[in-house]
Image 1 (tube, rainbow over the protein chains, first blue to last red):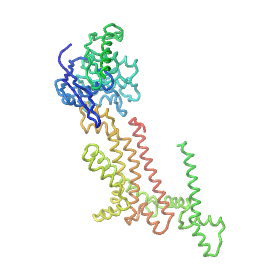
Image 2: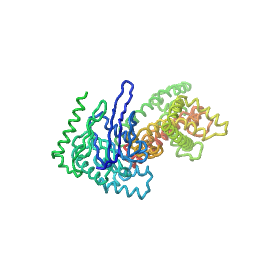
Image 3: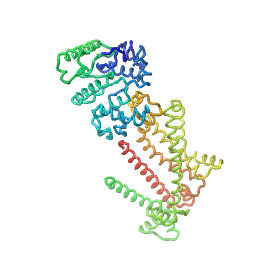
Length: 260
Length: 288
């Protein structure tokens, strides 16, 4: 495992002041994420896992603490296009074809026409969607739409991929398939991936590091480094090391629950 | 279309029936007066015949209006001052000019309001106030002011028409330009898109359905504006002028035929915009 820090957060806190109450979305969160790691953030709703991802992406500013993304502030990292962000919903534009949807960030970033076309082909084949260029989003299933969204996030070669429950709305069979694909893609591209999820098996299956979080205030309960090999067939989920890690995650989640 | 045929026809027949009855009632006093002067008494049949064929009735019968429309549409040269087509064209040109100005003004204002908070706070109340002033009171002022600057004819009419039509466009476009979801705006931020890029790639396409709804309201308002602009200006052509002239001389048939021409014109324009909307929405894969 390379030790170079890709994301390092030091005592991050974020408070939302509303009229009648103060919400501690995050309290004193510190974590280091190395280059090439696959990190999952898991916890019940309101534990601040999405908020933390949004802080990395500069969509939210912390009230306290310091954070560096690839050696820069989040804002600099965003301007340098250091990350691709996959949201819960695919967010495809219905009036654009699949190819045109993938082209959107590339057009915004002013790539040349030839390079845009080359990149569209490359990332669509990464998510195994060649031949769908001229289709419109409504002609694709939910899983395929989310794959287009991943292709789009990969298209401009950011080193970091931030994924906010990208498969949350999909059924389990499609989810398994996409998990497998995502792992392959991670091995091939060697990106640093931060992945927010509700699902324990998904987190354990995908990650090299699992961050267990708990709500009110949002904080980190446990950080688990997974010793599972990089090559992971789906069957690995029935092996002892996998089950042990899953148990530790579950314990962490329970500990967070009993806090309040 | 076929599904709505029966209900629409039913209502149309009902209205025609009511209209004919009203014609008899409203025009009967004139018929009785004339009969009394001639020391005649009227049978019901004679009464009906008289009330439906007076030259200056209080309420002309539908067939009188339609035959007047037919006469002034098909049996007059379109360049003639007596042609309904000619007057409709004059009003239409004012409507279109005002509609174009209004649409441009509306979109420009909406862009300013969406992109600049200060504009939003300072201009929006004035826009709303502007629509609270009765246009009938304002129109003569606009014509006088512009006339003293040497502008007569089409321009003052277009300005009044614009004054009415820009409002629905501003309101609709502000709503449309703000219609992208938070996720879509966040997504643009993650790509470090500029404001102009967000506008071009996201806000404008998302505002198209709102734009067309506004355009439909706007063109109808434009027509009203053009007609109102023809009323006080001493204009001699246009549907508004024709209504005014008709009322000076008690030619109610003329007024009604101008009214119908205006209604048909409005319906045609709105339908036309609806058609363009359908084509563009289909191209953009948006539901109408």
